[in-house]
Length: 514
Ligand code: XMP
Image (tube, rainbow, N blue to C red; front, top):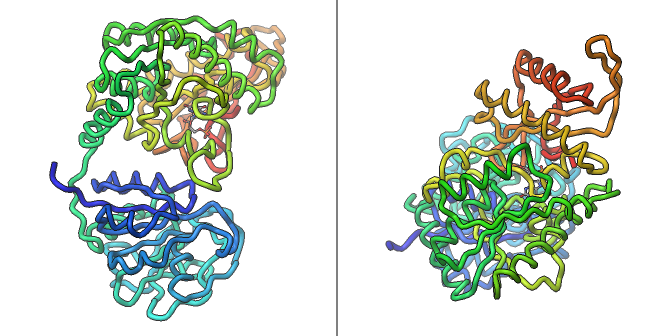
């Protein structure tokens, strides 16, 4: 294979580091993430065409926070510092940083001052960007110019006079920043002179080799869930190691209506995967009994899940690995990857693993985002019916059944959710949204059906648009459609007397309610 252009991303602990890598992949350039304290020798050994220094979740003075070696400036290749990365460059080059505002992220107007700046080629003079203003540049270093200002007058972008070192106070990688991808494109192609030659087929080929090498002659047990992620992980791993892969489908009793039957038939008939069905629903429901706290629920499900898998692994014989379809947003939201990233919630497939767990985790998709996984699934020949499925969390309906999870409440939720999905599918909305589902709220209210007073639970409808699950906007479903869904749910599901619509985006809310 022809040598690829490489961009090194130095990770200072931002929750957006993988998003930078993903955008670079989208622009068909290979990138590798190294920790902020990677040595210059290591960076040089990769022969990169450029370096990106990420943001950081730490809102602390520079002396106590991650710093990169100033020797990287001597490599002579272009460098782009993003947010904290820009402040670090400012500091290293002899400028000053000051605390200027709250560290919370928000959309802000940016105005370009230097219209000839290569980084901003093709951009309008003003655009909206996503940025945190905890610290910003108070005094530019010598031989560095300001390229743009933010609406509060602070420096939004800077560059050295020789156009080699660049800094952005805002995040070009997040979807909320207008023209962010164009800025990164300008950096890669106009500033670093990269060729757009890398693609996901290369990724698949390399990953298959890597998995085969890591696993060797060991046996792998796979936690198939019916979702896109575990299915793609399994098909990829099967290609790497053949029948050393043993798939198990655990029915945790937290699945949607007819889900187990439907999924198993696709696996067995369309994908030709050998899957063992394990009905552990009673065990899960037992573990959830009496628990109302969301984190406790996740931990209970996670622990039961691992127990069941360890048992199944014993049946397989000497399995060494547990394959999981963990994606990057799951990793980062569990605070696992970046040093200093805070835990948002424990995702069951990464959090709550017992330390003495006998199986090692194999997570071939853990650097990827959902849409990349779908694209890889298509490359691997997985049917569209599986690839189009909305994300479904590992802890299943337990995170959508608020308060204590009981079989009765789960049944109501299943029925309501099936109606919502049916209507979304027939109206064509299912494929237009990132994710949609019902949440059962433990709130009863009065209703009236056929002159009878009812006192039933509440269903919240959640439908969001997103490109990666990290941020999301609620979707405006038509009034007619909402009306039909609400009518059907109240009329067809006994014990539901009210349907409400969730109009919160992420942030400030998360997608799941928990
Ligand atoms: P939140 O609710 O954190 O969700 O905004 C972001 C995306 O992740 C999905 N999600 C999970 N996926 N295991 C998973 O595999 C989990 O524990 C989990 N929790 C949330 C969620 O459905 C959304 O798409």
